[in-house]
Image 1 (tube, one colour):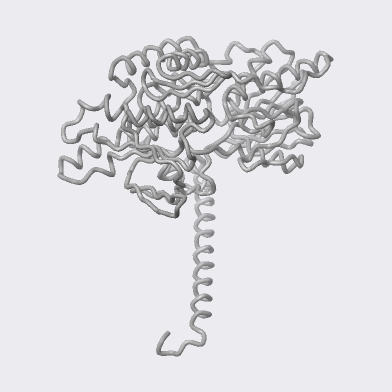
Image 2 (tube, helix red, strand yellow):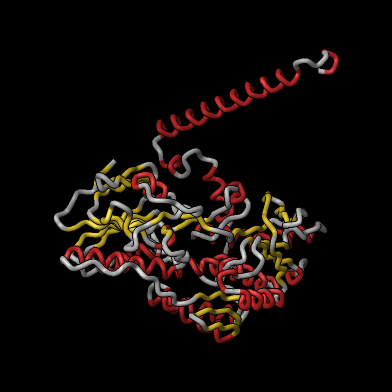
Length: 491
C-alpha cells in the first residue's frame, strides 16, 4: 500500500472521470489547488453515445478519450487509476485499489462523482445473459453479441436449422437508452445488413422493446411517448408494455403481465437498459454521516451539495437525492461546476453561493435516422428538426475537436448511407467478462505472484468445500426430518 504525500497547497480529490469528475476538475484549472482525480477507467466516457458503439456507428475512442490527454495541459491536476473502495471522512483519506494494489490519498476537499451502474432490481443474475449499457466493455460486448447473432444465424440457416431465436433481439427498458438502442438494431436489420447475407433475410428479424411501464419514454410525457412508439412500430419494432421480466437465461427471456399471464420469448441477444443504481460509495458515505439513501442508492445531500456534517465533501451527479433531480449529464456537469466554485469561494474568503439550482436544458432521444423527439421547456419537437437538434447538442459535448470531426464523418456514412464503419467483433469481446467472473478476484488473479495466486485459489477451494458440506448437512437434516413418522416401506 502506498500513500500520496501531502503537498503544501489545498488538496482536492475528485472521484470519477465522468461528466461530474471531468467538469469539476476542469472548473478548478485556474485555482490555487492540487487536484487528484481517482477513476477506475483511464478514459472519460460520453455515455449517451454508448449505443452507437454497440451498433457499429462510432468507435470507442471517439466517445471515450483518455482522461490524461484531456487534462494534459492542466498543470494542477493529476490522474490516478484505481477503483475507490473506502472513504474515511474523519481522517480525510480516500482508499483506491487496482489489481490488488492499494493507494491512500489525503484530501482537504472532496468531490464524489462516482456515477451509477445498471440496476437489475435485485436480479443481478440477469446480467450474465443481458448486459447493460454503462461502460465501454458493455458496448463492445453488445456489439459482438449483436453482429455475432447475425453471423451464427447465417451458419445455422446454411445447415437448415431454425434460427428464429438468433434473429430475435430484445431490449429491456423503454427510456431514452432503450429507445435509441432498439431503433438502431432495427435499422441494422432492415437497412444496413439487408444485402450482406445469403442464407438469411435480416429484414425478417424480430426487434422487441420491453418495459413494465405503460408508455414509451415516460419522462417525455404521454404525447411524445405515443409519437415515439408509433415511429418505432413503423420501423418494425414490437413494443411490449406493462410486462415485468421474471427470468433471463441463455436462450430466452420470460415476462409476466399485470393479469398474471406469463410469456417467454426465445432469443439469444438480450440488452438491459432498465433502471440504474447509484455507486456503492453512497452506502459508504451514508454509514458515516447518517444521511438517508433512497431506493436507487442515492444519498441525501444538503442544498449546497455537501454531506451533512461534512462541508468539505461534495456529492454530484447520479449519486445525489435532491429535489427529484434526474440522472442526466447536465445535473452532473452543473453540480460539479457549483462545487468547484464553492471551493474557490472558500479559499478566497467569499460568501457561500445560493443553494444549488438545476437549470433544465431539455431532453432528447433519437428514434432512427432523421427522426427524434425533443422536450425543451414547454417546447415539444419531433422528426427532422428534433433530430438535427440532437446531433448539434451531442456534437458540442463530445470531448476533443478530432473526435467531433470523426463523429460527424461516421454519422454522415451511417445516416445518409448504409455503412457502419465499426463492425469488427471478436470472441474476446463477448466472453471476456464471463471468463474474468470465473476467477475469484477477477483480473487480480492474473497478475498476482504465483504464491499469492495459489493461496487465493486454495482459499476459494476451501470455501467451496465448506459450502458444499454445509449444503449436504442441511439436505441430510431435511431428509431426516421429512422421513420421521413415515412407515419404513414408504420411505
